[in-house]
Image 1: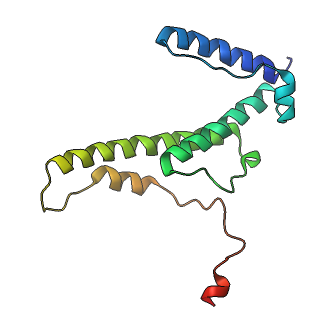
Image 2: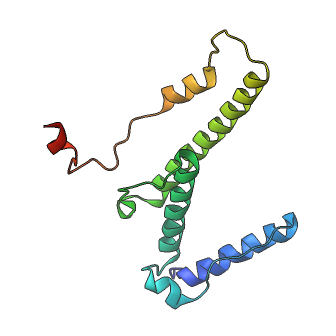
Image 3: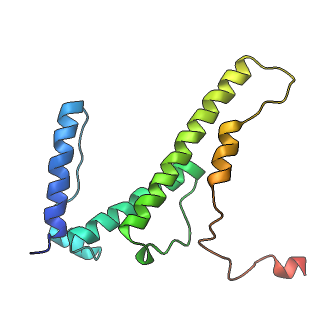
Length: 146
């Protein structure tokens, strides 16, 4: 079985997206379908393209969830499936944050002096794991702190 090229995969994604765009009434910009464009980025196969796009989606979702792009990520060491799982977790974080913000708006409109429980936030925090993806190799404050 021949491996699908990045260009062919881009065309496939564009065709699928075009159908959705037409059905839902939004404008599609689409992916470049030029082999040289993808080759310059080291993307040659459909698998490479899927991984490349997942890296971008992860970066965008991380920025949406935390306000900054991830630093020190070694995307080349992650599989596309691992990236997809991380992206799903980020989208869950974004969804929870939207719920908390809505709850906060409701509480602000009906404010009292009594403390408010945050069961959804507590449940979300319990599911989170600490993940140090970019440990400091140099502490710029070490000389200052002694």
